[in-house]
Image (cartoon, rainbow, N blue to C red; front, side):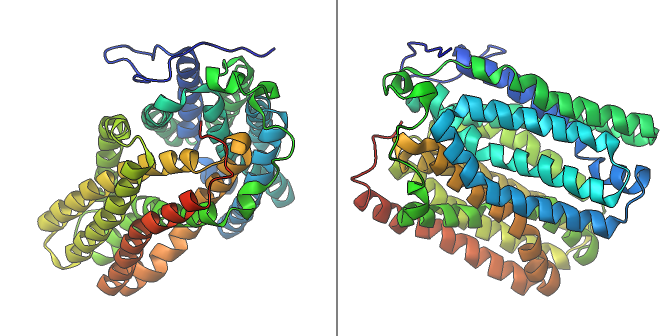
Length: 426
């Protein structure tokens, strides 16, 4: 059954003062996102500990297995996007989410390293493959004029859900029992499998229904074009470089605080709270001001420059007293948040506007694969630069971010000159 809705292509995606958006597709997507992010937030603090403390696996072996699973997930992004083009993003998304739920539930049956390796590769591969499909799904069910703002709203919902789940996960960590860990794993599995049943109910946006392709999928004759689209690939790579910023918060700053500064250890938690709160407050507002390619290009440039400034502030914190180190790190974190919300909104806009509308699945699969690759490379890049070489390493990262942000403009000009064959964006 194909459901459509005659939604306006202008206006805001969300309604101020309401608990849920007025758009039916965004309202349902909000519920799905909230449930899934709550489950993920529950699981993330204790996933590795379950396999090491409860199952009894070696920590290094678990880390290697998760790295292999991440590589499989990166490789799966483009084929998953192609599947979304061929059979429809709603159908592909439902299968990927449902499969992730089943594979996650299988963690409760793991008793050996071989079992762990199989389940973590399947679960992680399916989950990472779904990222690009989600991008194509939003292209099919959300009006083009409010799509970026809607993604910003869903990102805010994700942050809130992850935070709430993290609090509940901390309770399970305190209990530290097999039953507590298994309960969290089952709840996380349900947070994938349950919403997967509702994904096919998301109504298609009017512009997709008018295209005439089944379930919003691409018509025949548009396979793999994103893989051959060199300008789009260039923008994808530059966005992937800016995505490395997430590793600053998750990996680089905790290590930097402990090993290189006089700031207390709890500063890492403080910076994470600052990040979550400010992203929740700013992301939708910034996305509303990032409509259109020219504005998105400027947002990416500013993001790179702000990241360079944040790196400089982080570097200075090493020589300060504990109080001033905390203040400097907090200031750098605030600057980084502005860079983060700008690059997220700009990246979403460019990922959609430079894509061929007839093949959003494979295009969003490629763009999502680039983001996954940036996230995977980030920890190693941050540790071999900033953590290993101090101020010099931070300078290298800062220059890399600045150059990537500024290089988006010529890459986009290249893409637009070479883009006459693309379908109309939307």
